[in-house]
Every structure is written in C-alpha cells, then in structure tokens.
Length: 356
Image (cartoon, rainbow, N blue to C red; front, side):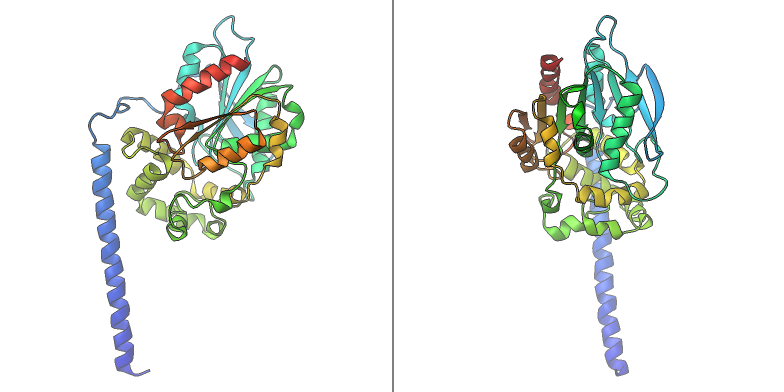
C-alpha cells in the first residue's frame, strides 16, 4: 500500500476516533449535569429517609449447602402474636435485603409476624461463592438452608422480588412437599418464570446489549471479565445512576434519593458476582415448577413500566396459577416495592391478614 494511502487511512481513523472521543466526552458531561439536576431536585419526599441498616432482634450466619455464608436478620413478633406464619423475604439480583425497606418498616410496626430477611449469596453482607458460577437451583437450596435453620417449624409465607421470586420457584421445584404444608402463602414481585431470552428492556437490542454492564441479563455478556465490567462501572458511575433510574423506576421523575439507594445496592455487588450470575439468569425457565404452588394463596405484583420483568412475565405466571391474584401497579418500574411502597403495602398487608 502506498504511503499516501496509508496516511489517508490513518487520517480517517484518527478523525473517527476523535469524533467518537468528543462524542463520549459530551455524553458524559450531559449525564453529569442530568444527575446533578436530579439529585438536587427540591421536594424529594425521601431526602431525610435513613436508608441502610434497620433494627433487628437477632442476626446470624447460615451456611448454604455450597459453603457460602448467608447473613440473616430476624424481627420477632409482638408478645402474644407468635402464632402467625413467619414471613421470609428473598431479594433480587444486584440488590440486598434493603430492597424490602418499606415493607420491613410497616410489618415490624404492626408486630403481627415474625420477619426473616437474608442476603443472597454474593450480595449484601453474605459471602461469595468460592469457585464456579452461581446457579438459581443452588439459590433454592440456600433458601432451604435458611428455612431449616431459622424456621424449623410452623407456617411460612415466602416473599420474593425478581431473582428472589426465581429462587422461590427453584425451591418449589426441589421441595414441592413444603407447599400447602409448611409454605402457606407466596408473594411474587416483579419476577419471571422464564422468557428472559425475549426481554429487550423496552429498547433496541443493540442498546440493550450495550447496557449489559449495569443490567447483565444476556448470555453473551457472561463472556465479559469481572475487571471489564468493574472498570466500566467505575468510569461511568453517573451513567449507572441514570440507567438505574431508567430501568428500575417507572415514573419520569422518581425520587433521586430512592434511585441513589438502589444504585448503591447495585454498586456494592461485585463485578465478579454479576458475571457469575449471568448464565443462570438468562437460562432461568421454571414454569413447570409453579405447579407446586397450586392450591397455595399467591399474590403477584408487577409495575406496568417494568422493563426488566415486564407485565407479560407476570401474566405468564397467572396463566399457570389461575387462582392467584395479579396486581398491576401503574407507572412503576422494577423496584415496585420501593417506588410505590404505599400501594404495594396496601395490597400486601390485607393478603397476609387473609391467609394468616
């Protein structure tokens, strides 16, 4: 190739790189402005809310069958109310037990039930898997270990959000005999029995795949190394906040404090944990497992603007469980129990009262 042609191509490549770099610099500058404007938004109802650690009566560590240490917190019922079922909360991917902040507050204030919260493997204050990748079937066994350790007798109501709902399905697949005997109620929030291979997050497939470092639900993203994702997250923290707002919430202007709370849970989940969960989330398919829930009261809750586990996923669950209740909450996204806590609690508490 002639020197002039090489120089020409180098010049074109340099120009393209320069335009791309300038575009990225502009994009990040705009993102930072948007984040600052959002965070400083006046009238945020949760700006004084002390998100984070909450009171408990007991905390302990339960070891899962795969050797992972699970952090568990328990709130005991008020005196004289110990005969009602224990409620066990199972949170979702890249989150922790703080997901149920408002439900924990409301139910602890009522004092009607014993409440159990735990951080899933690799999340929150639980330990990480020492080798291999995570598997939703293993999460079902982890749930069984928690139940054996802290609820050895009596009735149980399981509440799962997102991957937590999938964990309950895996538990039902492995231990169907619990349902109707020990497990006498189930609440599934913003979850799915499958269909992840059809999810596009409400955007084009190209854009959806580009957002994989923040919401990694695609099979190919599992090939990315933890270091690659971690560097992307650190370099794009403002973008992560905006993506959390976009895909976690349904309102056009959700509480910036709530967005920051959710993003802080996301960011505390290591890139290693994220990558180790990718395949099991993408391949999750447990519609047959729902048969164990037939005859057990089930409440299904989903936001109408949930792009991660859309309404169609909840409708598929209802198709398998026609006696279950379905509540669609308008203008809410994936973290419905945080974004629309009053509406969720207004449905959850009567459901619990009815089946307790």
